[in-house]
Image 1: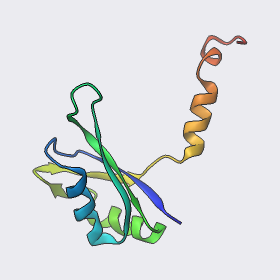
Image 2 (image 1 turned 90 degrees about the vertical axis):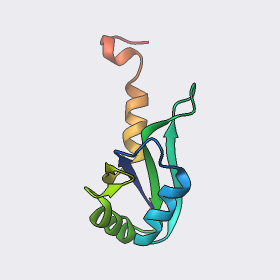
Image 3 (image 1 turned 135 degrees about the vertical axis):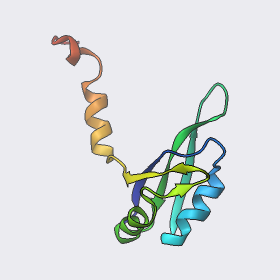
Length: 101
């Protein structure tokens, strides 16, 4: 099963293609994306890589976490699962006020 990784500390010059190329050294990359600012189109300094298997994701973490890429030190970790996003979106709105909708 594919495993998504959060990649922090990216240089603003690092492209999605470069990210995919680098992480391919650890295994099969299903997808890669550098997150960009909606207004400027400039990199926000982080991205996501989806590895084909959990084993390849673990290999990528071991191989790249703390390593230098394009002059910046990478932070590589497993991305939060979709269940985390779902619970956040369910809690958004009335829950912080302590009342009902």
